[in-house]
Image 1 (tube, rainbow, N blue to C red):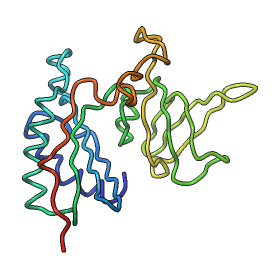
Image 2: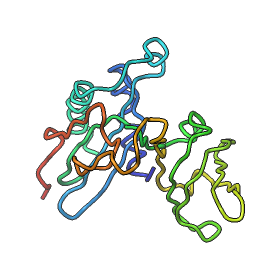
Image 3: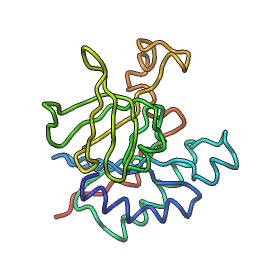
Image 4: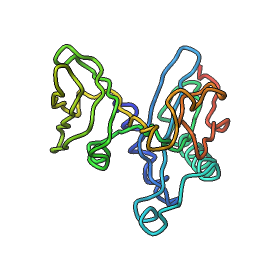
Amino acid sequence: MADKATHIANLLAPTVQSLGLELLGVEYLPAPGGAVLRLYIDVSADDAVAEPTRMVGIEDCETVSREVSAQLDVEDPISGHYTLEVSSPGIDRPLFTPEQFARFIGEEAKVGLKLPQDGRRKLQGRIVMVDGERILFEIDAKPEPQRMEVAFDNIEKARLVPDWAALGLSPEKPGKTAGKKPGKKPHGQADGAAGKRPTKS
């Protein structure tokens, strides 16, 4: 995560945790017309064990949106106009920490790099191992698969790649009617009107 997003995540994580949820990570997307602050939340680890079918719903997103909006108004980490969005991780779950990569060893991920590595700015491959701040991927390359180790600090963004076949779906079908990326918010997303503020003078 970028420094701004990391600062905001550290600021808001205890608030989200107090609601019985986990703040997976934060995306901060500045733009001339106003920034977007996107929070990804999930069921806490304890609740996931105790209640495996429990999933984040729209009510959870709305509750988090209300609480963090109030905190952001007090703490004021963002100057100017911004929009707060609170979302479940979806099936194309974003990965924000080495621990999250470790949780999904064996799964495939799509990764964007801050600096090119082996001539690549992007890669897609299976997560093989996590050793501290180093992530090992197996990527399909001709004539045979290759392994590539990436420092976590060089990862700009990463998402899991859904196994559509395992989900009983073909890759062409999901998300077409909605016109949105599949898996973005299958359980709920709150677009926080409360997270908007006028541009400061």
